[in-house]
Image (tube, rainbow, N blue to C red; front, side, top):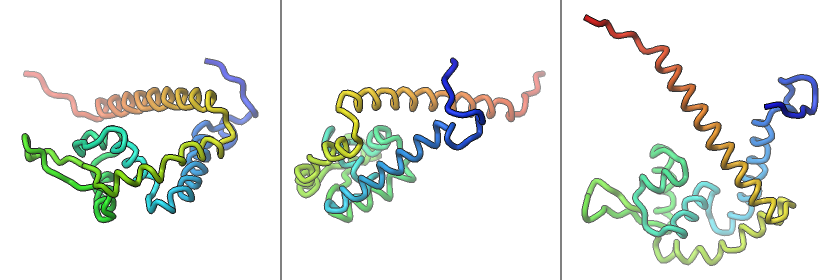
Length: 168
């Protein structure tokens, strides 16, 4: 697929899609840091709360899948939310191996204070709402495509380093 290039050097920083995504992500995270300070949440905690506000009580595994986080990253985040009185962990009654995350009354009430944040972020982007939706769709496609490519490369590398089995 041919694309129009801005410059001649393919290794120029300005030519890197990854750098544009990185810079935009850092800027967005910085904006959220300011917006979330009054709520006492970090950006990853806010994302977890968004999922819980939308879906209600969930197994930790499902919350991690929704956020695309592994348990090593998710567990400390949930501990901090629990210490802040926003969520509680509970064992599933039908399977005690399953831990569910539920909002406390305080965590549910925090939703009302957060309702204006998406609009403030949209305004800060300077992008009309319909373009923002298109951008989100494009970023979702990039995420899926790049994730699949990385998984394929990892599988190929793993297969290449696996010792061959002897046949008898």
